[in-house]
Amino acid sequence: MTLVVATFYKFVRLPDCATLQPVLLEYCQAQALRGTILLAPEGINGTIAGTRQAIDRVLGYLRSDQRLSDLDYKESTALSPPFDRMKVRLKSEIVTLGVPEADPTQQVGTYVEPKDWNALIRDPDVILIDTRNQYEVAIGTFQGAQNPETASFRQFPDYVQQLDPAQHPKVAMFCTGGIRCEKASALMLARGFQQVYHLKGGILKYLEDVPPEQSLWQGECFVFDQRVAVQHGLALGSHEMCLSCGHPLSQADQESPLFEYGIICPHCYQDLTPEKRRRQIARHQQR
Image (tube, rainbow, N blue to C red; front, top):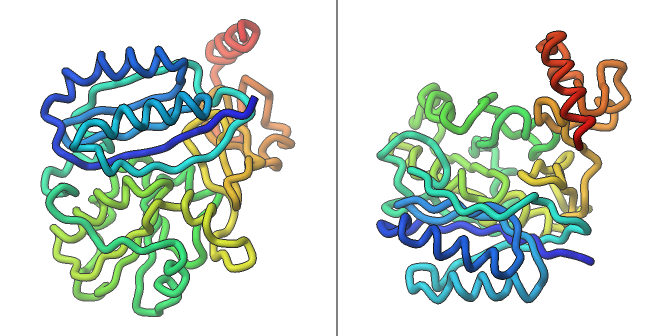
C-alpha cells in the first residue's frame, strides 16, 4: 500500500503547547499515523506518514485551531512506513538555533517561489547559501551555493558572523523544507543584512515543481526518515543509511571495502573500536 508522507511547519505563538501535546498524540495514534511532531512556544514542525484518509483527518484537526488555519504542507509517498512509531514532543524551539533575536514571528526574509528561484540565484550580485549541515550538502546542493560546513544548525550563527552585510547586499538561502531558512533569514535581518531571500517550500518543493531539464539542483536531497534521500519529482533516491553512524551512503560508499552492512561505513570506520564492533554486530543480529 502506498502511504502519504506529509511535512509541515509554522512559526506561530503556541504558549499552550504543553497542553496540546498529549491531545495531539492521542489523535494521531487513533489514526494509526507514524512520524514526529515537534511543539514549542514558537510553533509546530512535523512529518507524518499514513493513509490518505488519516493524513487528511490530522491536517483538518490541526487547521481547526485558528492559529493553524492556514497551515501549509508538502506531500510525498512511500511504499513502506518511513517511521517506526508516532511521537509528539515538546521543545524549546521547533528548529534549534539558540539565538533569541532570530524570531520568525517578528520578521523573515522574502519568500521566493520555486519557479522564480533560478532567475534569482543566477544574479551575480546574489550570495547563495546552503543552510543545511555538511552531511546533507555532501549528497546534493544548488550550483554555486556556499557550504557553511556546519555539523549542526546551532553553528550557523558563527558562519553568519564571518559575513559582512556591506559586501553582501543580496543573500539567498535554501534548506530542505523551508523551516531553517525562515529562522536563518530572521537572524540575518537582525544582523544587518538588507535583502534576504529564501526558497519557499525548500528544496523539496523545488524538486516537485521544477522540471529536471530546467533544474539547477545537483545530486539528491537528504530527508529525515527511512527514505534517506529523494530526487526530482520526489522520487526515491539511491542513498542508504549507515545503521551505525546515521550518515547517508552513496552507491560508492556501499561498494567500499570499508563498508559492512549494519556495522561500519567509510564515514565511521575510524571510530570503530573492538567493543563497538561487538555491540553493532549484536544489534544487527537482533534486527
